[in-house]
Image 1: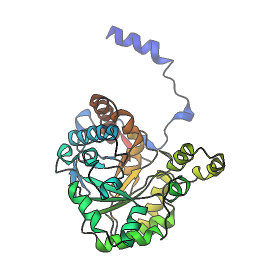
Image 2 (image 1 turned 30 degrees about the vertical axis):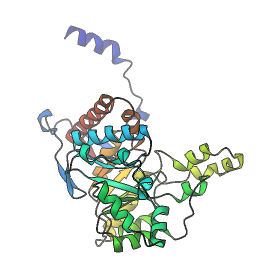
Image 3 (image 1 turned 180 degrees about the vertical axis):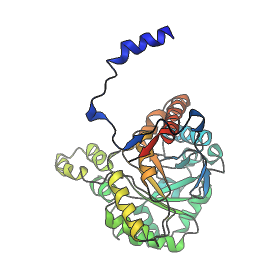
Length: 330
């Protein structure tokens, strides 16, 4: 105790926080709960029971490093009761050379959500060629619960080897929903959806919408960094365009409150969520059942030893427990 009190004295001045840094999104209520009431409660999401409201947002696949990353992430999902979206599975549409990098169901287990992932350009091409059965085969061989379609027109436009989007993505999504006997999630890849796009998506019988909001990994900027052409750098202002998760949630909540007949019933709130406190705030604020997704934050820890990823998630979950116990949204 003497050592602890000495630490408190020595650190007291260093711990002073300026008022401008106070997180003003919450009421802190220290009188309402005890430490014994802090456990997270399991709940149903994407048709399965999860224990932790964190989603592993789609990242990467097709290299030896990606195989290790996916295995570590799937192992973490199994340990902590989370769901997982795979990186783009485009390579698996034609052959199974890289199947091992994506094949994580045996690690994850059968009781947690696992979704394959394709881009809107691949979907458009499959529709054009009457090959939607390839998506069914993909879902089947990965033992996935469904498919995520990522919509990324800005990235494709700026990518040197980018694909051309010929149809409005909403039309391709509607065609897929007419065919699919598996759940479908639609996401953006780092710049989010504006209110009109969100409104159209919420009217469709999607399993969920994943925000992929502005503030996290910016794939438009990544493509400009990959491209040595100096003229491409003149498009940099476009990389600064997008919508934050908070903005998108405001619009979504307004749509939900004004239209009780929306068909999409769940959200994965991702993009610029760097810690449990952002995730807690946004999921609590949502009018729809919601969890929050992370990609780059998890990627940092999943590349090395599993214990690094494990420790990171343990701290995030403990933070969520504290938030659930003592914080109330303003």
